[in-house]
Structure formats: structure tokens, C-alpha cells
Amino acid sequence: MSEPKSSELMEKIVSLCKRRGLIFQSSEIYGGLNGFWDYGPLGAELKRNIKECWWRSMTQLRDDVVGLDASIIMHPKIWEASGHTTTFSDLMVDCLLTKKRFRADQIEPQSGTVYKYPGAECKVIYRYVGAESKETGLKVNKPFAVLLKKGEHPEKARKLAKQFYAQGSLDQAMKITDGLVLHGEVTAEVVLEVDPQKETTEEVVNSTGYNPENGSLLTDPRRFNLMFKTYVGPQDVPKPDFDPAANLEQWKAWRRAFDESEDNKTYLRPETAQAIFVQFKNVLDVSRQRVPFGICQIGKAFRNEINPRNFTFRSREFEQMELEFFIRPDEVVQKMAGAVAGLADPQPSTLDPQPTWGWELWHKYWVEQRVRWYESIGLGRDTLVEYWQKKEELAHYARACVDILFKFTFGTQELEGIAARGDFDLMQHQKFSGKSMEYFDEEAKAKYVPHVIEPSAGVDRLALALICNAYCEDQAPDEKGKLESRVVMKFHPRIAPIKVAVFPLLKNKPALVEKAKAVRDLLRPHMSVFYDEAGAIGRRYRRQDEAGTPFGVTIDFETLGEQGPALQDTVTLRDRDTMKQERVKIGDLAPMLVEKIR
Ligand code: GAP
Image 1: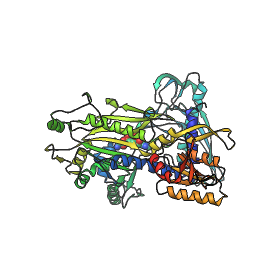
Image 2 (image 1 turned 90 degrees about the horizontal axis):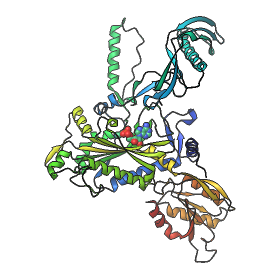
Image 3 (image 1 turned 90 degrees about the vertical axis):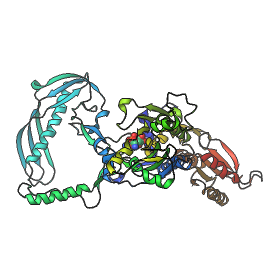
Image 4 (image 1 turned 135 degrees about the vertical axis):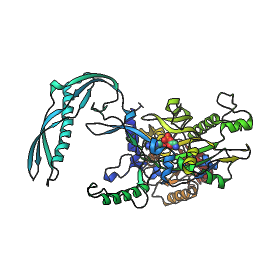
């Protein structure tokens, strides 16, 4: 089969997500809300499986990591200490023409001829439907420019400039009409003159100052903090409806109320990590853990992304799975072990932690652990890229960071970041809270603030990666054995939303139905089971292929013993990917399937 183009493929994936109940647009019946998504019945199972797999591998299968489940809204000082109130921002630019907002670093550099205009003159006629009409002439003195690519006609620039000045003049004219009582719709006729004599041109190369979609000039970049603000308790003092200069006392009272309300201001957490740092001491006290050890957490995070895009890839509400793994500072390792093993040293393995390991080897260890985990849920190494950030790309707190990228249908993008954060976070919280974050290491006989390695992954991004990875189109025989194309979601059995589907061959044979329901009830305590008796068996297989159910069990007449005792109480077990069927004893089904899905 020929490979579909990536945008076509992405459309098919998005459509399947809706059709099969994996992912829906949030608030869809109200037109949706950009950057927010809901998970349907299959999506909810998929996400739960991802989180359970991660939690199990991070905590239950290890001695040295414990869990935390902290609140989403926390003391606002936390975000000052972490640096989020001052540095957690993106540069944004707006299109002067469409007002569309972009992240400045996502503007594709462009080259071409810029047509510049110093201003325009216009005459605006306002007509008020069912009310009155007014005529006014005005001048707009606002610079505007349009970038034309090679071969494009100057008329395009003139046309866009006219559109821009039409909007500009409308804004101003609307201000003049303030106070008018209007009924019905407001419409305006605009007669514009963009003077070709005043038009100048300039050649630009690799400029990011223009909207790649229409060539219009963009605003200068401005900082935009990505945290969602919220208020705890009494809040939101309305704007003053009096003149402060003429009512000084009233103004002071309003200001006091405003300042108090600002004291109640905090944020929806933009990452789960900070809660782990601020609970470090409490967890240490109760868990009997010793450094090196980790605290992990799964939970919602919120970022007011400027440009949510690529389906759920960049959302405004998402879930993170984060581990903060606390290690000894290299100086302490040096003192204890006499040497610090690093990346340059010949190492037998980065899988077997040693007391001589410095932060570099712990960092490498976690990169390897995380890649192995992705493999265990079906993302092979060939689908992943380990990107070691360059020094100039590192966040101010990071000594090193490896991004694990996945080859998404729309491009190779970050799935998880694994950062070596030094002691930055604990030191900041020690400074801002005044509470000691020091740890006394009995073995090292030293007191220190531990350093941190942080593997931080997104649940939603991983769900999307698994969906993109699973999507497959191939050929399967229909009822009559004729090949037809099928869509199959090849989820790894560990994370597949439904593990097994149980079908009676025919729904109008009570003995088959009864037996099939008994098999369903037998498997249910061990895994998610879907029972389906509606339609031809081929159609039922196809439905489950699209849902990504790895196994199908069919109860037929052999099961009932109609072909002799040898096949009695056996069923056919169908493998979704190979479509091969084998005969299995009902008594062997549960242990056999449990083995395959664990
Ligand atoms: N505590 C470190 C931290 O939060 P990050 O690289 O900003 O680091 C970690 O986020 C992971 O969270 C990312 O690798 C990604 O999987 C997920 N993530 C971040 N922003 C996201 C967004 N807007 N939508 C979906 N997932 C996001």
C-alpha cells in the first residue's frame, strides 16, 4: 500500500480518534476550546494504562522511588522561588492584519521584497441598520508593511494594506460613535487610498518579522507568561467606576482592596515538579529513604500556550509524569569514594548504579531507563531520538538535558526531557521559605543539599505518540475471503485500552451466548474485556482492530462439543496483528492472556 502524506495521515488519525472514542475536542458542542481535549471511553483506558505502567515501573518495581500526589494550586511563593513568575514566558508576536498570535521562535524565516507604506487616507461611511447614518473623513498615520515573495504582484501588497487601514480606521471611527444608541448591525463602507508614490520597497533575507501565512507585518516580540492565574478566596475587585483624582479616599480604599485581592492570587501549576521539591523533607522523614532516592508524581499541569497545535501535542491542560531523583553532590561522592566516575570513564554498564557515580552517570542511567521503558510499551528505539541539548540551549537551572524525541506523524518532536538540575530547586526553596533543605548523609558523614536528575514526561504526548505509532492500514479478508483494506491500531498489549474481545459466533444461539458470557466473566477479573455479539464476526473483528484490541476470543460450535469431545471447551484465540487463530482451552485462557499483557 502506498504511504499516505503526513498531513493526510494525521487527518485520518484525528478522525479515527473521534470515531473510536479516543479523543474528542473539549466543549465541542459550544465550538470547542483551543488547546483543551477530552478523552473518550477508549482514550480514558489508554491514559490509565500509560499512567499505571509508568507508576509501576517507577515505584512498585523499585526500592528507591516513592510517590506523591500533591495539590494543583499551591502557595504563590513557590512560583517565585522556582523562577516561573519571572522566566516562564514565551516571546509572542501578533499579525497586524489578522491579529493571529504566534510564538516568535516558530516563525519561519522568509526572504523577499517588503512593500512599505507610511500611512493611508480613507473616507469612511457608516451606515446603521435601522438607526442613523453618519459620514466622516479621517487620516490614519500608522506604518504598515507587507512582505511579497518573489513573483508576487505589488497589487497584493496594496490589497493587504487597504485591508489593514480599513480595520485601523474602523477602530478609530467606532470610538467616535461611542455614546450612540444603535439598533441592528453596524456596517461600514470604506474608500481607501494607498498612495503608490509613497510606497517604498526593501529586500529582506531570512526575516522573521512577517506572517508566513499572508506576508503581513508582525508586531515586535513581547513576553507572555504561560501560567494561568487564579484567585483563592475573596477576589477580583471590580475596576473603579470613579475618577481617582477627584476621590482620593475612595481611591485609597479601592487600592487596599485590590492589593488584598492580589495577595490571594496564585497559579494553576505549570509543572508537577515543584510540589516534589517543596515536600522533599516531609517525604524523607516518613519514607525511610536515603539519598540516592526519588519521589515521583503524576498529575495535571496547565500552560497558557500561545499557539496550541498538532492535535494534543501542545495543549493548555495536560498531564505530566515526573520523577525527581535526589543524588549526592559530586564533592560528597569524591570524599566518600575517593573518585567520581563520569562519562569519560570506562563503565561496564549504566544500568547498575554504583556509589562512585557522579551526576553524569546518574543522568545517563535515567536516559537509558526511560528509553527501555518506552520500548516496553511498544515504542521501539527506531521510533525515538535521543537529543543531547547544546550548552546554549539549556535552561538556566540545567547542567545537561536529554530530550527523548518521538517520530510523530507531523515531525520528530519532544516526548520527554531528562534534565540534570543540580541543586537549583532545593536551594531556591530553602532561600525563599527559610526552611533548611539539607540532608544528613550518615554513610558519607556529611550534610548537603542533594542534587537532582529529573525525567519528565507528558501523558498526553505519549498517548498521541502511541496512537501515531499504532495506526496501520493493511489488507484483511472479508466474510467471503476477499481482501479488503482494514485500519488496525497496533497498540502494545500492555497499553491497549481493551485487552480482549469475546464473541459468540452467532447471537441467536443461546448456548453460544451463554458460554461466551461465561468466558467474559472468567476473564474480567484479570483484564478489560469487551463482549460483542452484534453483526457478522468479520465486522466484529474489524471493529476491535480499529480499537486496537490485541486478542479476540470466539466461542463456536466446537466449544459446545458439537464436533466431538476433543474440541469441547476450547475457543479460537485471534491475534490482531497476524490475524492468525489458534485453538485454546478455556481453562488456559486467563493465564495465557495475563502473561501477554503484563
Ligand atoms: N519539570 C520539567 C518540565 O516541566 P518540560 O519540558 O516543560 O519540563 C516536560 O515538560 C514534559 O511535559 C514534556 O516533555 C512534554 O511531554 C510535556 N509537556 C510540556 N508542555 C506540554 C504541553 N503544552 N502539552 C502537552 N504536553 C506538554
